[in-house]
Image (cartoon, rainbow, N blue to C red; front, side, top):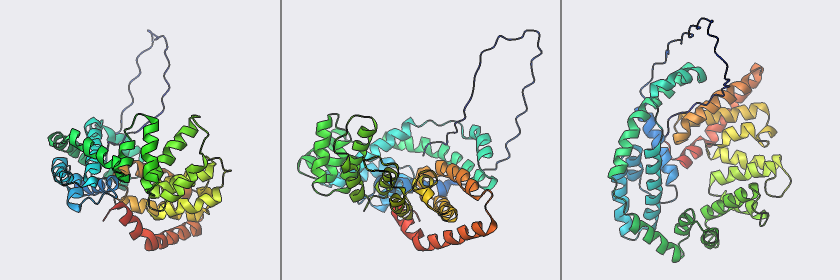
Length: 365
């Protein structure tokens, strides 16, 4: 999980200094009053969810997921390497993903966590600010430890790539889909994905839809646009993010069809039921979310916020917390008491009906 970054607009102007003018005294910076809570255990929960989501569908053991949550990449890599050497193709894919995770950990920018506290205090309510501060501190301790473990991990890059290519050539859909990400030749990449799609492999459909959507948005192609919806709809049966992308696509008319926000809402809401982290803030901003009554939309924001506070959005926790800190007050502002009460009641019902499903989908306790 990278450190929380705050961005503020600024305007700069060059002016000739007035030599006669007395220098203005710098305004006093009010002291930071946040007292960080101990979030070591919660940070580990977030890391576990992140590892679970990254390795979902690869039958990786809980022990390895737990090792990654503690930053013990070297131990996880050792266990997976032994499995891969015995012919476990999913272990090779997991090794590739952990390698890239290690790269992101090593290259992460880590400003002094205490220097971020003034912005935390401005942008979060007091009780949430304490947890955010505690997580920044926990991340500052975790990052170097995880980086050191990654540097000790013994990745046999040549063997991993060789086994991955052999598995893809043998027709393994998962290996072909993973390998397609690194194919520089567009034709080779498309061939790998098409082979996996022919076996009805959902991640390959999602990857192909994403690639095609990007190409259309960049004006690189207008062919096979109808496949975007087809692939996203099929992939969405097992991949919540594909379901959400389908909702956003349908709401904007991105695939050659007219925009249809009302139909899109069903897919977006189902992604929220699955606990897809980006579904909740999408519904507050996308046309399909505006099809809801205000109380219903607010109820889903309460549901998402509760899910986030349980750790179920992994390393998206801080960014998502900031989003909820903005959307929930905006929806509550000026609302009559009966609407707020209705939203809270609906949120409790949503949690009772879908909370366990959402937690299971994200591997959180």
